[in-house]
Length: 350
Image (cartoon, rainbow, N blue to C red; front, side, top):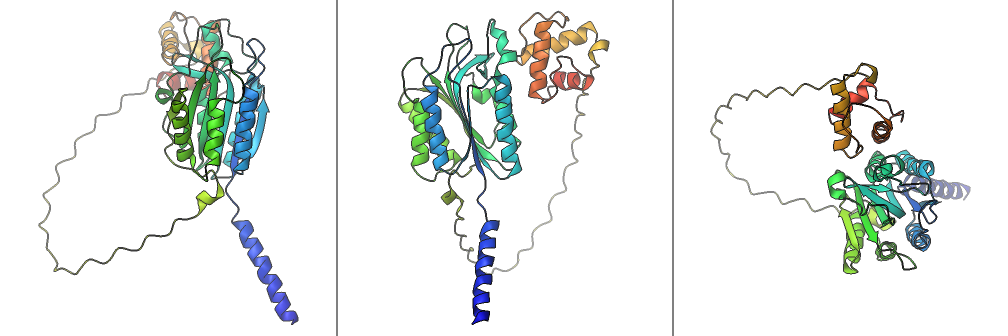
């Protein structure tokens, strides 16, 4: 009997260890609700909206990173924490919900930290957080997929509006991006927060179903919204991970006599490919010519980072544009271009 008892204990332990090895893939979400701004009216609706999104994602088994009233550095830190958490446990399903102010500049959407002060339109280049950089950070997680919900309000009297044209700015990725533009006023959770809650509560749907369903809900209630669809799905609940039954193998075709195919015609000679245009190699700032500096300013203006004169003088506005570019390519934000960074900029490599 002792041998039987030992065998039962051993089998139970083996089953437990096996189940531990089959742990569910990570689901992690960042909830960022900005309600109190230093130089803009308070957004009372963002508190209940963030709570609705947080509770709905937690009910789906998401690990929650909950942040409120984020300044610029705090915002960058929270995005970095989310990206690192997802990258450490691939494959992860990631969700980001943001409620707060946003503006567009040259059709590029920027989220506003609570510390933002927009005295001039182009101040957003140094004080805002471009949506593209957030999505690029999340895409670095191996095999990750997820959804980014931007619940946006337009600041009053800043001369900027809207969320830009997301589909023109964001490359296809495993992340669905939804931006909803809210009107000022009202109280309680926004339509986007309630729609996300209801879509998640509807069942164990994946990223594609949740994002498509949320977008349909917003358009039905006449909320201006944009959707950049995900290129692949990701599960929002454990039941989504159940493997589908394997299809039955196809029946073998009836035997037929062998057919001797005619020899293929000779392949035409391969066309000579035109050589790739040479990359324009730049030098560091100290050795740049006036033409080089004007070219740098023109490229920065073309990508929406610079709105000053193309005069070859690297003043404060040019330095701010260079720092924005360095932030996007994850380089130290010195405001001064190295030769490698200048070459990468003018060659269109970002």
